[in-house]
Every structure is written in C-alpha cells, then in structure tokens.
Length: 365
Ligand code: NAI
Ligand code: MG
Image (tube, rainbow, N blue to C red):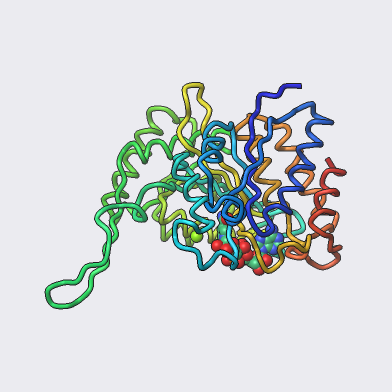
C-alpha cells in the first residue's frame, strides 16, 4: 500500500457529516479492494468549528488544507448561526479556504444519469447522456473589481458601481485549466464572454485564442457570446463539451446547466489553484448543495453529489482515472436499478436512506 496521498476531510454542518460518512465507506472499499490508502485528516469547518473553537475555521485547519494534496468539504451553515456577526459566520470558513488556497478555477460538471432524464427541466431527447463541464473563473471579474461601492451624487441620486476587471494572467491560467480538461475529454472548448460589448471580453477572447494557437491546437476552440451560450444550453446542450467563462457569466451559466440535470443532490464540483513546482494543483472538492437543514440528521440526504466530488478528486488530484470511472459507473448502475434517495424519486423506484445508498454503491463497486 502507498500512503502518500494526503486528504483533508471537512464534513461541516447539516447533512455534511451524513453524506461524508458514505464517502468514508468508499475510501474503506478502496483500501480493501484497490490497495489504495489515503492519509486522511478530518477537521471542523463552519458552524461545527464555531461551536468547538469560536471561529468558523481555525488557523491549524487552514494550514492542514494548504499542506494536503486535496480537500473534500461537505457543506456549511444553518439557521442556528444566521445571527452571528459577519466574521464568525459559517460561510466565512469556506470563503477563507477558497481565498487562501487561491482557488481560481471552479469546475461544475453537468451530467445526466440514465433513469434521471425525467428530472431534467428539458425534454429527455435533449439531455439523454448529456455530459458538460463548465469551468468558471472564481477569484476575479466584476465580483472583486475596483472601484466598487455606492455613492451619492451632487444631485442626490445614488450610484452603484462594480467593475469588470481581468488581467492577461488571470485569463490565461483559467483557460489553461480548461484546455487541459478538454484534452482529457472530447477536446472541444467553448470560450464564453461578451466581446461585442465589453473590452474585458475582447481581451479574454484574444488571450484564449493566443493560448490555443501556441499550445493547444489539438483542441477545437470556439468563441461564443454569453447570451447565446445561455440560449444554446437550453436549446441544444449536447453541442458542448467544456465551457470556460468568467466569474459572473460562469455563476449564471453553471446554475442554468445544473437544472439540465435536475437534482442538487447529484451535482459535484471542484476548485483548483495554481500548480506547485511538481505540477500538482491545490484543490478543493465539494457538492454544489448546501447543508440542507430541513432534512439534516434524518439519514435521508442524497450522498451521491459528495461521492461524485470524491471521484473528481481521484481523477484530477491523483490521476486515478480508473477508480474514478469505477465509482461513476457504479453510480449509474445503482440509479438505473431504481434505487433512489427521496430527492430523485421517479416512477418504479425504491426509496432508500442516505446510508443504504452508500452501502448499495459499495456493494455495486
Ligand atoms: P441547500 O442546498 O442546503 O438546500 C436546498 C434544498 O435542496 C433543500 O430543500 C434541501 O433539502 C435539498 N437538498 C440539498 N442537498 C440535498 C441532498 N444532498 N439530498 C437531498 N436533498 C438535498 O440550500 P439552502 O436551503 O439554500 O441553504 C441551506 C444552508 O446551506 C444555508 O445555511 C446556506 O447558507 C448553506 N449553503 C451552503 C453551501 C456550501 O456549503 N457550499 C452552499 C449553499 C448553501
Ligand atoms: Mg450561483
């Protein structure tokens, strides 16, 4: 056994610990059947960390995250902590992780699983076997650009300002991630901006094109305006393989793509930072959903979003494509057999608990 893969697990709040227990089953299976062991550290984040230490993320946990090969997070937050001051709130823990790990590329796959085509907002024939990957720039753009703020003008009107800013480096580093991912998939990339009305979009388009021409001519690149992309996502989503876009458009388009798949309980995500000297990127993996306080503690949550996030971790942080494929295939088989948690019930399906879903998946593996 090799024990050099260090993994920090942060279950967090609400359903976080419940779904993470199912990931632990998969990790145990890997140790037993695939002879792969992880050097796992578990830590507290969010409300759980606040209860124990009075802060949503301890410095020690932050240091563990920076030194680990990968971080797997459940979810943070809940009504219990809604009244806390800003810097004590659970989501501050998550934001600190993202900021200090400098996670600038956010990956959101939109995959439609067999048997779940009916959950989509679109007609089955449009989404059957859909498999899109959206890469959203996460640390720049209009959410962070200066100047920003609300001022009062001499005539008494108020004026709100946000500024869309991108530098060449910010564009190139996220585009690189997207080109590399496209290479591992169908080698097709759509780069999305609004170069027709925004200078930052012109720069985006030029830099992505230059990078393509110098390093990635094997990837088929197309540029698309963001409004057209929104339209194409609901009109003919299967035309896409990988999409790369800025923070604002990525926020909107990834939520739109998520609804093509139907269920929050099925959506994984990954976020990458810059590569270190050995080429390994800092990375955090987490389900798209939150802590779901309405169902927490009842063993009914869908653990698949977190298990699929773990599979992404195997693929992207550890180059363990074969194991990732096995897990994703097992998810498909289990769903096709009609075993479902409450959130993805359909006709002729059997409702199981969170832990039974985890058990069934490991049995399938
Ligand atoms: P949510 O994603 O927690 O829940 C939305 C709805 O989807 C709920 O009805 C919930 O029961 C259901 N749901 C979510 N995940 C599910 C799963 N795995 N299986 C079955 N059903 C599932 O979003 P909401 O309700 O807006 O926020 C709840 C709390 O979570 C808040 O405190 C919020 O701040 C926090 N949150 C945290 C996030 C994170 O940690 N990344 C992201 C989004 C929200
Ligand atoms: Mg959003």
